[in-house]
Length: 317
Image 1 (cartoon, rainbow, N blue to C red):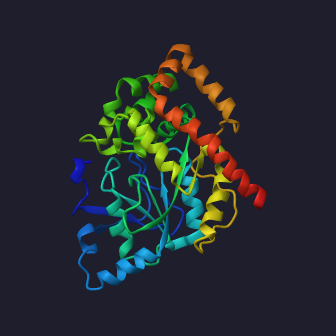
Image 2: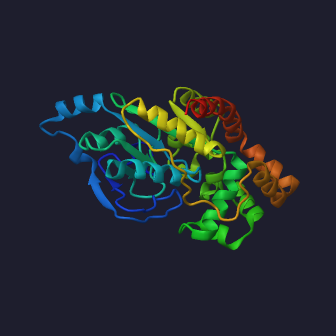
Image 3: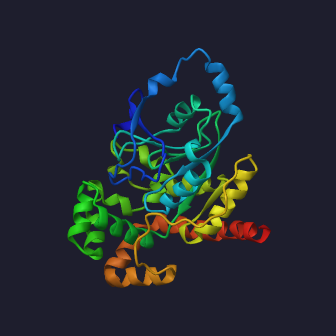
């Protein structure tokens, strides 16, 4: 990222899935067919007024993909539902950031697109664009183990991946807490950072630190979001998304999808949290939870609010 001017006038990476490919992860994973689109080419066309009018009449599903929050499963579902009408929007590097106006420029010339997923795009929706957002929140300790397991299996070409592949879970967590500006922030209040102005407050995303106001901002955003849920309520949250999509004329079929999941992990959240806590030990566990206060509060805020909504969808179906 290059500060507040990041990505303006620069090249954005566009990848349409025509098969089952994976997104560029925050950690640096790049696969699938990649092309480049100049942001400048999306401005100043002769029929700009018509396209802006068409854009104002569309509603786009936008998946704000928080790394290791079951986002690959959401993307798989969207791809199966919409095929080439679903697209991914990423940046030139895994640590680049995209602003709302980058989304507006991206979809303006693409009337066929009905759903977009992005690791790097930050909310809210751009002015004049109607968006149905989908956001998943995860318990921070459960998420930390998932991040560690993913990096241990795949690496990322960065220091975090190297540490994960060379150490156990407790050593990885300790390194991340002690080296946030080298990438360790990926498991330190990262969800609040992702959903708040904290992402843009510093020169580089690795320098981002969540504050109380950022937590409040994230809560306010989710409060106004049509569809959010938690990873442990994934299937029910996707049912909710399907019902919301139907109100704008988009059909997402009911199906069970699991992509990029950590192998051999217990299905029960409480069991997973118990295992992770035992691996950290009392002192490191307490430090980790203290330093993830905002993400924990966000999860504890989201869980009871999402549950009644997804239960209503289950009852109605």
